[in-house]
Length: 115
Image 1 (cartoon, one colour):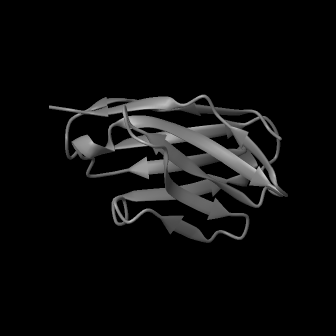
Image 2: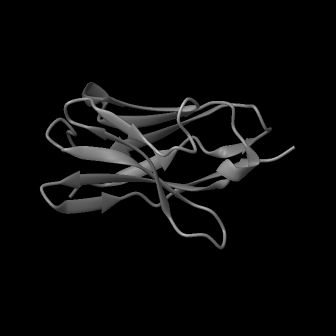
């Protein structure tokens, strides 16, 4: 397990962009999978994007072409670049890490898309 801290959330207008950061307390080089979930009020938590230690990525259909997940092992940080934001993207976004069956979760960062 590692400690994860999200940042970068905020209020943005539709069509705008935000970049979320997930800072880990230790090296993420050997962590197999890291990614982002989100949960909107009254809805279930859903997987947004994942990235493996090998660099492969996967996205929810609802964000494909708009969101990009990346990792910087030197900075022990995972990013989620969010472009062309829509009101339905409004949610608390959570970073997670999965290493050999052990999961770690951040506390979340609020993203609100509204005009």
